[in-house]
Length: 132
Image (tube, rainbow, N blue to C red; front, top):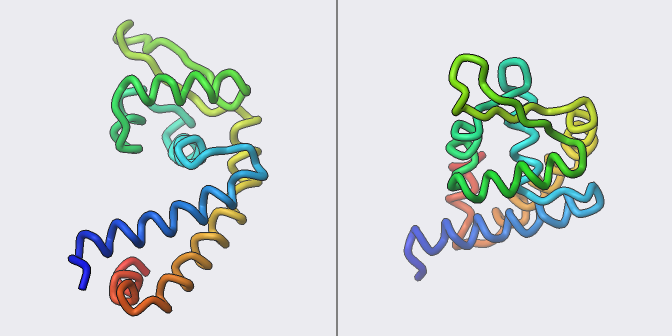
């Protein structure tokens, strides 16, 4: 029997694969979608890069590359913090809000389907119940 950790990793992997497939038609990766989602719920639609990194579980270098990709496609824009010139913010654009909103139904549907499928696996059913 797999350990609890192994079962959690398996569930996570299964769900992530389904979410990745669901976002592909929207030309969004999981990290991109999650960043846009965090920004849509943030005050004024913006977050310090450091706070976004923490929210997504990424390091500074990874979040910088992520935000650069989002900026290149016009989904976010960076700005310097007026109070602390060292602080860099990223803000969601109207295009980013529209892209995130369009992808959300597919993301949520894929999440429900992935959890439903995983609940059929006897090794994962109890974890799925906890997640739900």
